[in-house]
Structure formats: C-alpha cells, structure tokens
Image (tube, rainbow over all chains, first blue to last red; front, side, top):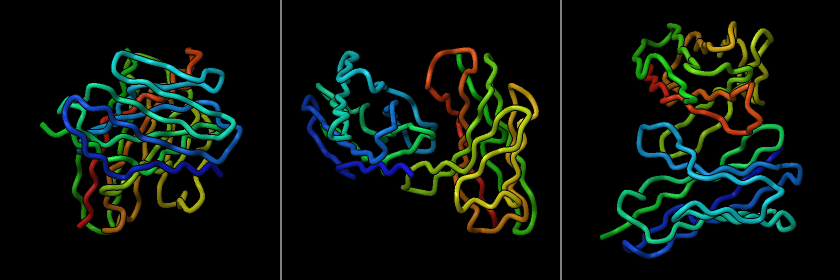
Length: 109
Length: 117
C-alpha cells in the first residue's frame, strides 16, 4: 500500500520567515496530493491541493510543488504569521487517501 | 457549501458498552464516506470506506465486527463502536466526497472524541 513520509516532524520559524515541509510517497499511481492544517481538537482543514498533471500551484502565501518522477511534494508557506501555527499533514491518494505523519509548525514572534 | 457534521462531538462511555457516531453531509449527497481514527499526536488513519447502499470496505487490521458502519442514505453514515474498551479511546473523524462534483476533495466532519472508562 501507499506510504507517505513527512519531514520535519517539528518546525519552528520566526514570524515573517518561510516554512517548508516535504513529503515523499511510494505509490506511483497516486494522483492527488492535498495538504491539511489541523489545530488541536479540530478537523483537518484543506489548505491547498495539487493533481498529478500539475507541477506547481500557488494560493497567496501558500504554494505546493510536485515532482512525480521523484515521488515527492512540498508545501511552502511564505511570510509566516503566528496564526499559521498548527499541525500540517500532507496526503497522497491513489486508491485511498494516505496521510503523512504530520509537522508541528510553530511561528514565533 | 460542502459541510459535514458529526454527532456527538464527544462521548464518554463505560467499558463494554456500545457507542454510535453519526456523520452527515448537510448540503450535498455523499456517495462515499470515510471513517478515520486519530490517536493523540498521531496522524489520521483510515479505518473504512463506505458507499451508500453497500457494505463498507475495512482497512487491514480494523475489526469489522467491532466497528460497524452503516451508510443507509446519501447523507448519513454511522459508526458504531461495539463493546468499547479503553484502547478504543480516540478521535474519530468522518469525511465525505461529493458524488456530483468532479473532485477528489474530501470534506471532513468536526470529529468525535471518544473516551472509554
């Protein structure tokens, strides 16, 4: 089955800096790659997603890149703000949605 | 649009009893619903996929006789945890996919915190 690895597990940045989270997946048939933000005790919130026919997608301060050949994808958050602090999950979907292990992002003032 | 609700939001039950969790798509028809479990500080793990009117497909290691799933309508799926034990304490989250939309997106419910004492 699909295996999604995510790094780093924790990430601390200063407000205004950029944050990058990386994921790799194993199933070459996966074709949908969403990213979620989850605050403590809340539901996962979709922040951006990308399909396999696209290499890059951007939405304001958030961007995602996908390298299908290498089977990895990354989340980039620019101009980080304290409210960006949360746990971020990548996921990959082939025949089912498989989540990465999560990254605790802390944006410090 | 695309709202999914869950009920209850939290429940405490005694060991050996059963608990039912409801998942509803409020403004769309969900041909497929998913049930996930999330332990503290861990990721979401898919438990089962349910399609309206058919039996659920369970992931490896998930006991289908313990976690009963019913998807009787296009807007409602239920998860019943039977003979609950403390190790079943977890955050249970459902999600639903809009059958009419050409989209992979899953819409997540707010989750149910189950504590078994």
